[in-house]
Image (cartoon, rainbow, N blue to C red; front, side, top):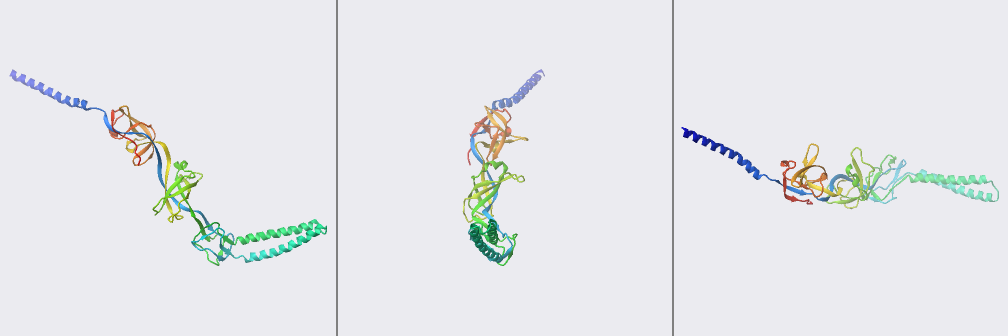
Length: 352
């Protein structure tokens, strides 16, 4: 009986020792396997970048004028051939002016008589045959008639509607014999040999667009790029749309460029020659800010950053990192502050 008790006690000791050994072994194994976490890194180097944006625009003729008459009258001559090109000063419409012409002839006859009378009185004045006052009155009459003739000639010129510049005539809205008033539009003339491109950019890019800047655009339905040069910008940002209107002169000349057509304008703005770019997946979004993990000696260092321009691969960091830093790009969710890490693969910026 005593022997059995000794055997039982020995068996119990063996079981306890085995249990302790089984609990101790995994801990010792973990202690042996623990080490710095291996992650991928990205070396920060300064790069030259620009923000590529696309904005809508429209083509406009260099000049566009609605042709109207200054005075009311009946159309007696119509020289508006739709779709044709006219030269500057070419007569487009002539209104009835026979009454003005008759008045002009009468005044011209009166002026001729007044001139002869003024000559006779000048001769008499030279021999003191008349007073200076009488001569001055005859001279005044001549000047008044000249002024009246000039006034009638101006009235006659208003019955002639001429092309203000060389351009293409649009569709006409009047016919021969129509009685016109100044409110009616006869036709529209456009200077289409030179086109303008009008578009707007967000206010944050207002400082980046200057006269002389080149822009690339493509018209709706077109299959090629065209170039335009900025000639002017609006004096201020539109308070409603928060955009800046820009007008550019089109340097291309192609049949697909038609006034009024929609255009897509491609711009490269916000140029920076010292930009720091990192992969987009390296940024950790937080509730109030954004963070990235940097390698500091052999530990993970969390830093708050401010982001800028981004695309599908890289994002610009405005504050929070500096050239030469190594940014962790993998295992971000498993890393804790000051955790030991080791860079297994280091990459750099690659332009697309």
